Each structure stands twice: as C-alpha cells, then as structure tokens.
Image (cartoon, rainbow, N blue to C red):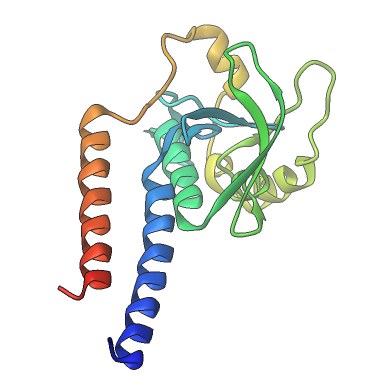
Length: 196
C-alpha cells in the first residue's frame, strides 16, 4: 500500500498540472484572425459591437508615418484572449457563418477592452449605436492606440479592399505541435500516478 503523504502529493501535483494544462490548451486552441475575430474550440467568432482594423490595414502615427495597425490590433486581441479563460455568448451569426458574440476573458468584456485601449472602434453601422461609444470617446480623448494618429475606419477600408479569405487559422504545424505537447503532458501525468 502507498504512503498517504505520497498519494496526497501526487494528487496535488496532478491537479496543478491539469489546471496549467487546461489554460495552456485553451490558449493554444485560440487563433486570432484580426482585431475583432478569432477561432476557439473549432468555432469562428466575431466580437459584437466593435470594428477593428483589418489585418493588412495600415494607419498613420502622429508624425504621419504608416504603421501596421491591423497587425497590432490582432496582437492586442491575442494578448487578451490568451491571458485568461475565455467564454463567449453568441448573439447571432454573420453572413460569413461566424458566431457574433460578446466574450469575456478573466471577467472583463473583451470588446470593451479593445475599444477602451484604442485598438477597435465602437460599431456604428446600419443605424445602430454601440454600447461601447463612451469607451471609444475615452480612447480618442486619451489618444490611445488607433487614436494616436490618423486612420481610415475599418468599414471604409474594407470597401476599398474586398475580403479575400477567412483570416488566420491554426496551421497544421501548430496543430502537430499542440498534439505533441498534449501527449507529453498526458504521459507525464500518467507517470506521476503510476509512481514511475
């Protein structure tokens, strides 16, 4: 029979490994396409009520120099989504089949964080006013993110640059890497339980 103290340690280590692995697995399962859309658990999402620069969109800084604001907005969304557990509430589907959703990460509204930090605008299309207008006004007044210089609204930019694909997806190399890491963690937890 095993020592109770040894069993207790194994249980604690296994629980900690499972928590760490679950968070890492979710982060690895999220693929961000641009500043307002991503894939998670095989589902495509678009954040409701915000509009972020398209991936290849550029903006101008305060001195008039171009910078890749679409890439930066994507990177900022990726940071938010991979830091904490993410949950989404789907409201509808858009014409591309994506879940239009309100999402939270670590208890914070992801759309609001993106708008308040200046990496997206409050969506104001088709006679509809976003709940994020005050967050946008705050970002604009503080000259955060996109508001630090000049930019074309994402909606206007898209009109001049029609959509050519569906954005980033998890590449086959990334999927293989995730499978290998998942198997390694699984083997490690099994070895703890078996006492090897």
